[in-house]
Amino acid sequence: MFLGTHTPRLDDKGRLFLPAKYRDELAEGLVLTKGQERCLYVFPQEEFGRITEALRSAPVTAKAVRDYSRVFFASASDEMPDKQGRITIPTALREYAGLQRDCVVIGANTRLEIWDAAAWDTYLREQEDAFSDASQEVLPGVL
Image (cartoon, rainbow, N blue to C red; front, side, top):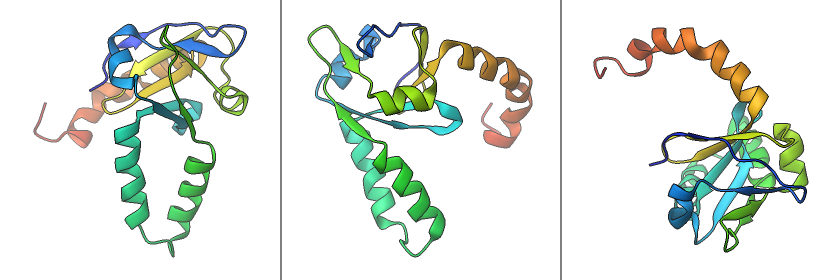
């Protein structure tokens, strides 16, 4: 499970340090792909495999499945962290997420998300009130 908020910076070569607490879990490889709201998703290989299987069993006759799968897999990049725990984020993914230098890496349960720091601040500010109101809708009877 991925939790927390971290603030690494991209270097001049488009590399990003993964949060130290997750390096062991991601040491065998990971998959980067486009996420919603112009962030990037970072999946451990095993979790990406689970998602792949779920999409494989979805009906290819459904246009939404085809559309989602095309974008999701076409933008995916399998990466291997280097010995210092850095990954290289491909140019197309950096451009999609608007990543410049200051980034935010958040834990989002079974994945990490990489955000441009300013975009994350804006998103979080806009979602704070909705977060308070959503617990009954998202987790009825749990919280």
